[in-house]
Length: 159
Image (cartoon, rainbow, N blue to C red; front, side, top):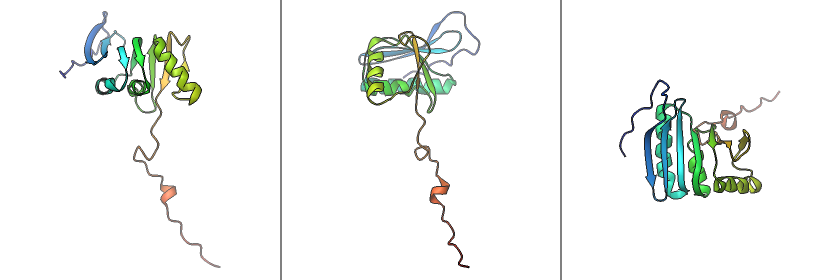
């Protein structure tokens, strides 16, 4: 993949394409809007788009930009595709999804009814925008050790 240019530092009056990636059946375009980067997703979001969205997440992290996703042109999504989209947000962070397509809303609704995942915050009618929360990793997954759980307690002295 070619190296994309860094996003402009100053707000730009006209939106323009920064970078795009394609996989079989889907594409992601990163567009500078003047107020930040919008990731425009289209096509099928499934296991085949995981690497392309991981590349997009890497670029967003490198540019220090939060993810805003336009999902209006998503035609199919499964759980692995939804996980790849959620990975655009930092662990414990959130992801603003603009114009989520019907297939995306349907999957989120089914998953929330059966499992409660993913956490969703409404910011108006769900077909206009919603905020998805990416769970923070468990402390053990972050390499954090619970010292209290591993501490050796002194043996009590007898009186």
